[in-house]
Structure formats: structure tokens, C-alpha cells
Image 1 (cartoon, rainbow, N blue to C red):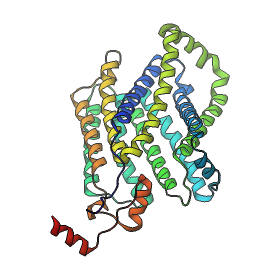
Image 2: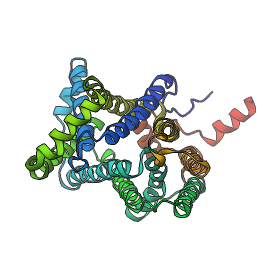
Image 3: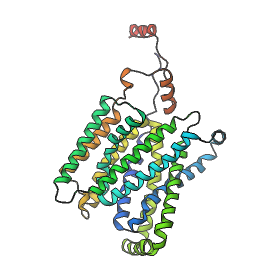
Image 4: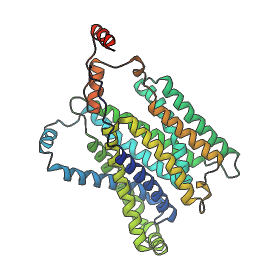
Length: 372
């Protein structure tokens, strides 16, 4: 029997999926807890600094641990040429897009809450679709467009509920969410471009370090210019008061576990892509969003009405999650034409770590049907 096209091995997904859901959900819940307790003034933008520092630390630590068993790979990397021209520009733009998305995301969480951020953040799918069409000319299948339409329907329900509610429409939080979606969509386009750079595309750790180091240095410059002159007012006094109220040991544990959860979630992303491909990662992110919406309602509804999950909020979140899941599993335009071959198959197989399946001849296909 002819060999079947290889795909990323699906076995061993339970552990990385479980860790990704647990660490990702805790990361957003702990971020909301830190923001709610106002350990420092919002003007400090501490959450962005924490995320960048965590990403850089985990990349350096894991690289150090794996270095002893990867001497050959290290020599291979050292022989690669540095990026120049458009790839180098894309690498620096990657940092800019990531920083824009990061800052806007935490502002949206601070103003609207994590549940609002997760639901409205579903707009990243249609926004990414539009930007991909405009910038790269990418085509989408009917299934993908159907998933996008379901996401838009869920967002429309959320918008209607906010407009008809007694509270003022959260225009600022919505604007930050949409700006976040644009930043992350452009980041995704830049990353996809960089993965196709020949002959030596930058590794995932290289791109993560580029974003983390650039973001942290940008925050340091911001802190030196805006925060340092008012350090006592913006950092020292509010942190001392919040730590006394929250508890010194609990404060240290909250910040430490928050940074740890970010690092674990980032590494789980690599494991999910390696073992299940991009579709598994997309589905895991969709499930995580629904878990965060529910947990935020349970954890913060009593003290923050924004986090409460009512009927319209549940319907909106359900549609956004369902649309995202359908989009993730929908066939791409080329998939509808059957197995891919030639250079296209080789390129996709190399990207996923497998080999393209050989094409069957017409005679071989006829003999296979006779055997059956």
C-alpha cells in the first residue's frame, strides 16, 4: 500500500495542550489580578515589561540547557549569514508590531477587563484576513470565510449589548482591542514572511528574542524618560501600599507565577506546532479564550461588574469561539484540490518537519482500486 502523506505527529498532545490551557489561562487571570490591585500606576506599563523580560529569560534559559546536546546545530547556526535587506527590515518591524499589540492588549485589559479583551480580541481573525489580502494577496476558502462571518456575528452581538446597556460604550477599550488586533496581525504577516526566507530563516527563538529584547529596551527608555522622574509617586508609594494590603509573600508569589506562566505558555506553543501543526495551536487558543472568559466571570464578577458573563456575553463569546474553531479546521483554498505535490508539498512538509508523499501514477492508482 502506498505511503500516506506525513503530517505532524498527533501523539503526545495531551500534556502540551493541558499545560498551554492552564498556563495561558493563569497568565491572563494573574495579569488581571495585578492590574486590579494597582501595585504601580498604570502609566508605568509594567505588564509589558514583565512579558518581555519573561520571554527573554525563558529563551536564554532553555537555550542554555539545550546547548550541551546541540553542538552540531550550534555550529550550523554560527555558520549562517546574518539577515540583510528586506528580511532584516521585517525582523525589526516584527518588534514594532509586537510592541504595539502588547501595549494595546494590556490597556484593553485594564480598561475593559480580560473577558472583554478575549471576546473583542476575536476580531483579530477578520482583521488578519483583510490585511493578508491587501498586503500578500492571500486567498481564503469558503470554509474560512464562513468562520470569519460567525466571528463577526459574535462581535456584533457584543457591540449591540454594549450599545443598549446602561453603562457608557467602552470606546477606548474597543479601540485598544482593535489596535491590538492590527498590531498582532501585522506581526503574524512579518513572521510568516521571515519563516520563508531562504536559505536560512531565523528560528523561533531568534524572533522571540528580537521581540523581547527590543520591547524591554523600549520600555527601559520609556521608564527612564517618564517614570524615573516620578518614581516615588508612580512606583514606590503605590507598590508599598498595595503590598501591605495584599501581603508581601503573596505579592512575590503573584509576580513570580505570572512570569512563569508566560514562559511555560510560550514554550507550549512551540510544542503544539511541532506535534500537531498550526491548526491544533489555533484550536487550543480558541479553547483557552473560552476558558478565560468563564474563569474571569467566576473570579472577578463579585468585585468587577465588567467581568460578569450574562446571556448576551455568553452568546457573543460562544459565536466568536465557534467561528474561530471553524476557521482553524476549514480547508485552505489549495486543500480542496486534493493532495499537494511537487515544490508546494516539499515546502509544506519541510515546514512541518515531514516529507512529501510521492505522487501516484494513473496506472498505480488503477491497480490500487483493483486490489480493493
